[in-house]
Length: 276
Image (cartoon, rainbow, N blue to C red; front, side, top):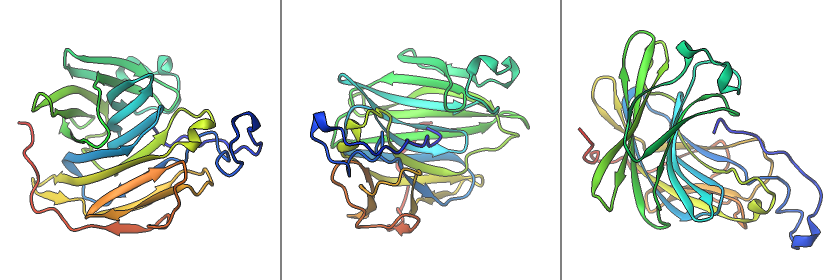
């Protein structure tokens, strides 16, 4: 989500019996992992959610032009979501000229696609999928240079029940021919109803890889811990059992990796099998 900044509030919400400390913000602080790696053509990553709540986005594969992950939207509704931005500024999708808009090149029959706004504008896709806490899910973004003007970004999700990769959607956007760069993951609370700040959200991100422009796979062994401007400190990140973890909300304390610091895990030996 282009890191929307929650407002800071000072009132105690007495009817709910919640403390001022937990209700400093309208939303949990958005927390991120930034992966240093070269520009590339493929970005693979995995996520295992340990704790979730309604209104949570576990974004697994983010880059300079879009993001890809899973959401718990509420009322037992869960989805895989893949979005790519228009190159233009502004938040009203109706004001973007046709020639400047994200174009859809492929869509799986089970996927819904729409335009979005409010956080920049672009193309967005949804795949209804009842993902589970404690299960590991695999994601791949593949970039193809269409011309000196546009790049196509394809989103693939591995469905463990079907035991197959699903090519969800391909969006093309204006990039001046750029591929993949600026890699990151995040955990975000988009419920933003004050009560959501009391719910812990926690996930592990593991086995990340970038395929560089020369075809070499690079393991994502380092990650920088950052957050948005919300000043609350019930956030945390670190490395446990050689896996990055990232969390926000509830009773969490920032006791493992300080904000702004880079953590490191052992590099992977070889990437997993990818879709053709």
